[in-house]
Image (tube, rainbow, N blue to C red):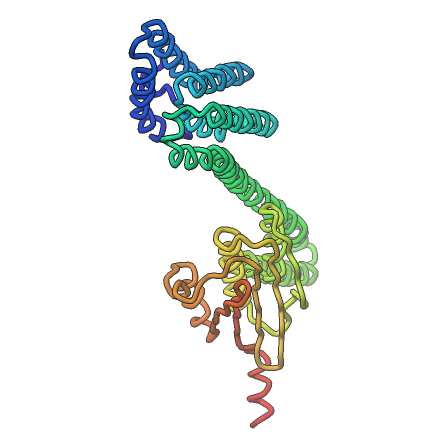
Amino acid sequence: MQKWHHIFHKSTGLSPYVWVVFYILPFYFIFRFSSVDQNQWIFGVIMIAIFFTCYVLSFKSKGWVVYFWTSVQILVSITMTLLFGYMYFALFLAFFIGNIQKRAGFFTFYSIHLLTTIVAINYELITGNPVFIAQLPFVLVSMIAVVLLPATTYNRNNQDKLQGQLEDANKRISELVKMEERHRIARDLHDTLGQKLSLIGLKSDLAGKLIHKNPAQAVIEINDVRQTARSALKEVREMVTQMRGIRFEDELIRIQQFLQAAEIEFQLEGNPKLTNTSLITENVLSMCLKEAVTNVVKHSGATVCRVFIEPSRTDLVIRVQDNGAGIGVMNQHKGHGLQGMRERLEFVNGSMDIVVDEGTTIVIKVPNVFMQAELEVEGQ
């Protein structure tokens, strides 16, 4: 059996409990209208009980039953407005309708609720109900809430849902990247190290057979084993070096997948293959690019992200530009991510600047160490 504090949908938080306090108000309106008519008073109390029961059941139910309880609430709300001048049940309905997840159901009930509320208010104004007219300022505020509250709640819930889907997509992409990397390592080991170890085994067996029959040929085979072992060791070291580092062009592929999952257009200008950059600098650039694009997805609200690669003879400049809300000059030095990017770039004698103009542009600059070495040689 569900506990009483679990009667509301968990996505709504504490707000329904706060709203329950306002159920005192309809009793005031009922007593004011039906002080001499006991039957009318009883009918009003029954309407309040029905609305409260349907409101609780609508949060607990699933499927088409939710729409049934919501329809009953709309009927009770109209009745309370027409008979007693109490229209504030419309606020409860506005809040609940915003939590309807299905698009068709939301727009249907939003339209019905808005239309019936407008009709009921106009009827009260035409009939000149003095109690209703006395509360016109509150009626106006309530009408604005009926228009805005469902849309705001619905959009907020959709954003939370999309954020969850984006995080799940990022996790799946990360797992796929790891799986592909494992497959690549397995292929490289099989194609290089496995082949050479097999050759070493065959030549070692042959040298063992020839050591007494043909010592000279056995020495040749042993030399071949030594040379093959050195070649295999060199290839293993190269593979380990590549696995430790992050290639910039490989990171760009992952960045493109990340932005695509976030529904942000990705544009690239320049050659992603960095020919005059050391592996450690390329590794730092890849991490900085990942952090910059993560900030674009999480904080900018952008629809387009552009990456410009601008190499020169002595330096490499990478610009990450978005068309979002802008990072803000006051917040440029506060984020741990941006501070981490600056610290990484300082390690390779690089720098980072932030330009805010119709969006945000992060400018990363690192020296081309190979080209600098050539200049120093030429200057000697």
